[in-house]
Amino acid sequence: MKRTNFKLPTFKSKYDYTPIKIVLLYLNFTYLFHLFSADSPNFYGLLFMIIITIATFFGYLLPNNLHSKISDAKLGINSIWRKKINVNKVLLVCAIIVIITSYGIVYSFYNNNSDILFYLKNPGLAYSNIKLMVRNPDNFENNAVFSSSISILLTLLSGTKYIFFTFAVLYWKQLQKKIKILIILTAIIYFITSFLVGSMITIATILMSIIPIFLIFIKKKKAITPQPYKKMKKSSRFKVFAAMALGVFVIIFFLSNRISTDNNLLEGIKVLGFYVSHGYTGLDYCLGLPFEPTFGFTSFRGISEMLVKYLSAPDFFENSYLVRNELVNGYPAMSVWSTIFPWLASDFSFYGIPFIMVWASYQFSVIWNRTIRTGNPHGYVLLGQFFIFWLMIPANNQLFHTLSNAASFLLILALYLRSKKYYKKEI
Image 1: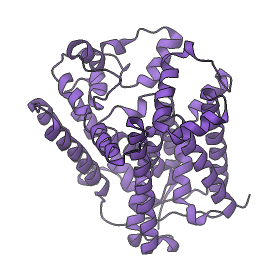
Image 2: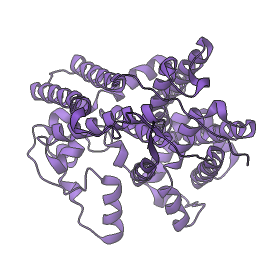
Image 3: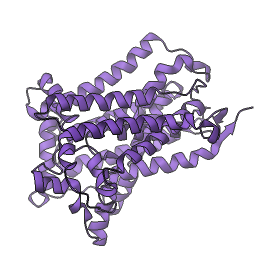
Image 4: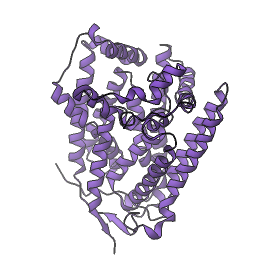
């Protein structure tokens, strides 16, 4: 396979605050939506969200304000990422894993093509059907396509889908035609699989993960290198917005189809508004409960479930705010959302959440500014995970909600940490 000298744009502008503006605007909008729709707004919930907003903004400001105490290399100043990657090969390997995983998912739930065609047209019904099968496995035939060891391996490699889509968008203009065809086919297979399992989140997280690239497309006119990235035509900008709009439309279609097969998009929009705001109701309830530590079994639920299942570890998750909220207030622990905060607070208390937000925002700030200045592609993949973290705050602790999600984040983090050794100071 022909090797190309792939390059990404770099920016030597002042410290960039674009991402945190988007994050805070989103969080405040979703909370205000909750306030206006709530029957009786909770004062402590409002106070808590104000503190969270301040902590998040303060954390993002820290690296620039502490510049004298932070090395230039950490912020990507006068540095560049110098590592040649065979992007074609990376995309090929990731595409194969995505396709194999998709095949295993589809044929573990469906026995014939007629069912596949029916549920492809009705993803809302597919969601209900899959949920019923998962919750009542004894009533359905087990059609596992792969052995348990291969299934676990594919789960641990779940992060390759984020690498695939991020690299595909980042390097699109520099890719060979046959690789572009492979990308399109793989994307179609992935999205068809999402429809067949009725899983909106599998599409939503991909859209969230490429937001960093969307932002640099807007900033391209300020790019220093390489030359092809210096200008962005209006038609190209339109394509970027159109692609994002199409993704949002698909999500709304999913939601409307869950309610009715008539596919009333207005109802889908209403449900989307409910999705991004109702978790604050669960948060309001949890703020009134006492703290009982769960020793990491809630924040890292995707991993702790494996400890309980295979090592017979005690399930401290039963002491979490989520479970106790259902017992005390009748608010469902898992069938609806409670925001990310009760998940984290179950291990660190609500008093510890502002400090976690400062730390997360600080890391986000450093990685964003270092990545856009150095052009490290692994930085963009990790930033995609950060955006999933931020945008899923009104819902749950998405990054560690399942073993697949946790494995994705840890794989991407490991690749990013390894890539840091290839930073070189420019002369």
